[in-house]
Length: 219
Image 1: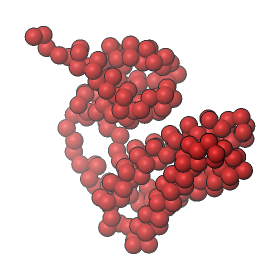
Image 2: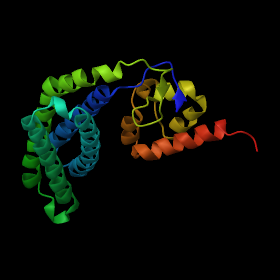
Image 3: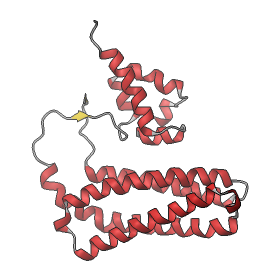
């Protein structure tokens, strides 16, 4: 738990931030698809990381939905469950096809990719238009309760700038990974990790090790 002058990102802001990452990933995927078949391996990598990020987003979203279940109708809950199930199934099938050498057929993969992109975009648009405002209204009384001094937890939504300000010695970790702090400083750790070929947890572990080293009392 690290001190910070900023308030913690609330649950809906985190889900919205997920969407920003996913929108950007879908844009990259569509750009790579236009350059296929030369971008086959790029498409495979994007699809894999997109699958992981969608799964993480769904888990976070389901936690918030569970807290606000009373605010949702059975129909809304069912639609949300079906859409999440469909998205995961499509990405699972695509990842399986990409891993099969015999499956390197753009004619087979491209329509599935376009359908997945269209479906995920539609789902996110609907969530931002109706679901997120509804959840936020339901969470508002809890999240506006008086709080003690705000804190920053070192996790995947911590930004590079906030961490470097609080712990300047973490700057060397980013420099070793060739992270452009002036350009990427406002990004969350999960975005930076993905961009530089790491798991978010791996980057966080490296940073925590540096922080513990600095704060560890002499023996």
